[in-house]
Length: 102
Image 1 (cartoon, helix red, strand yellow):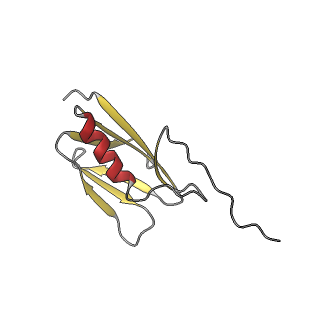
Image 2: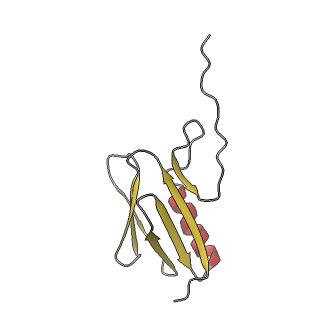
């Protein structure tokens, strides 16, 4: 299978990890919950992890690759105060200022 479309996801946070198994058919995410989040990869998409915190979704169908990447990102979207969560590599998170003390 020749992979034409790519989508890279970066996982930011202490203890947040990703692991791909079963030849890119299963994706396990540790996102600070009490359990691991398990995602089944659709048939036209392959997933592999460069490190514990970089996930690559590849495939020949652009819509399916981007749809699966969006479903992975929706497990823990980036939050604006600390910047923790799952974000696209090229995504910029504009951070908010916290509470001001008098």
